[in-house]
Length: 282
Ligand SMILES: [Mn+2]
Image (cartoon, rainbow, N blue to C red; front, side, top):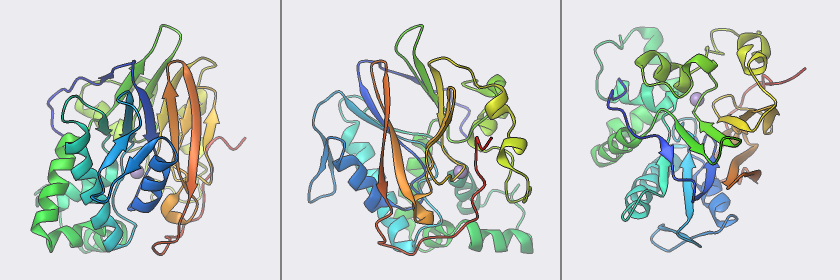
């Protein structure tokens, strides 16, 4: 279960934010994306920003789908840099994804997670981090710490005209940036695509376009593995399917400006495969 402790989710607006979509073990692409946006990485894998006003947000789903080696490296990289970058004040933020939630439930032996044969197949097919953590106690401890650091949502408010809310998954407006457990779950996972195969995302998640507005109060999310950044009015998906061989993307927020950048899949591991279900395809 997600911690019910309410964390202050307001981001200081004097900082500039690099907001990265679903990493899924693509740690090399993450490092490259950081390097191309004003961060250097030293021989100990520590991140150094070019200015103290630069912060990083990862939108969740850091793990699973990638190779065991790369998932391990991703956990190590996030863990050490979370501690390193947040020594004086917070510069590195993590948002909870549905994969982090499920892995925590598996490894903490959540009794509400029944180990049916179907569940064991799911574990192998979708949650390959679990097996890795079951065989590496130190890495499991690091993962659990990372898990405890995750926010269900974050919000950047620059002015009455410009704000950006960040969550892992898209969700209905009524759940966005709310503090109850139902809203937490809605911000972390939207309706399952694997249980709704053949249904177009724009039908399955119709609220993403129906509730979209023509203003600069943005909602940026990941989770939906798209072939490129998808935007409709103030709703933006930045999960550009790095682990499926496409790219790792980020949004860059500075004062009232919003821009994007990407790094193509580097081929350091075998890509996963999927059939794309396009968002905002009308
Ligand atoms: Mn996800």
